[in-house]
Image (tube, rainbow, N blue to C red):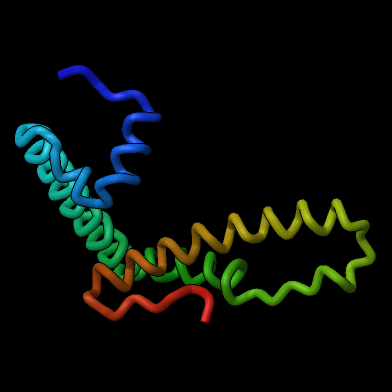
Length: 121
């Protein structure tokens, strides 16, 4: 089977809608389904591991300390007297820390079979 160029893919999708993508080879569909199933199993295993770690005395202490200095820590960059580029750089740095901490908290909730709350509400 010869792979299609990007123009053929776009024009085919435009003409056929989402059904156009259903023409994939059965073997390819099975491979995709298997990869998706394995990825879902991996995510459940990772969530379970984070939940076990959080529910251990040392894990809870370590993660609570991390959450205290990331997600629970208020930051007022406007009052720091920094130039805009410095504020933007620090804001990106803090967002990276918070993003990782939130991802860990999300895995813990999934591992404990709790409802996953959106980060920004």
